[in-house]
Image (cartoon, rainbow, N blue to C red; front, top):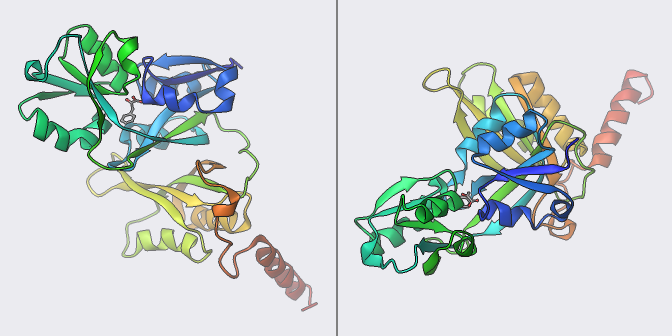
Length: 310
Ligand SMILES: O=C(O)C(=O)Cc1ccccc1
């Protein structure tokens, strides 16, 4: 197994900064890839042990290229997540003034975080999407665009200067990144975990989504992400990406997954992994009737009834 992690590059992305906060990254070779797809394909092909990619931001929601890659193709699993607070710098070639800027570039997920700033400061600038914010900086260095929204730290790497820093339409904007590998046994529960799944409904019927969500609700499981993605099979055809609180080894979570497996056309397990920035102290106790002990004693009671020992 190659001891390398692929990540959304090139060098100088927020993704790289977030990846370097993981202790295990220090012992791996970190290899930049030009896109989320190519980083994940490197894992599927066995060229990299895992890939680190953005998956969600607090302003715009899910990063759809990442979700779509996890939903389709050879199965992958999430092993870790990292949250990073993001503000942008406007990077330009040295000497460029605000009035010189006709084209600006960044990753599409950056646009909703800088839209108001652009409207107030560069209302006539033309937006060009790039494969990542650092790639936009690289393209500014090459002269293809006039300015890039990227991390201030990317300026030195691409010989650029920050004309403005601290750009963020929304206070406390955070981006969530995940470390994705080939399917294997999930890490042991920490007590502050999250479980990700993708669900495909068996048939379209009134209350179909409520039925899926009911499997979590009746077991006292809180949801942290619900994003529908088109299946590609026609208008109105969606699958649901869900993050739920807890670990697959928690009885309430495994029972909910069994319930979903029975009623869904397909369930893809995307992993159980520690929640970033949350410690066991911050996690509320299971709702009454949903602890492991209560599930075990209820199962024992049924077994006794079946044996005539109730
Ligand atoms: O990591 C980067 O620099 C990216 O291009 C992905 C991204 C996009 C928007 C906010 C944070 C990360």
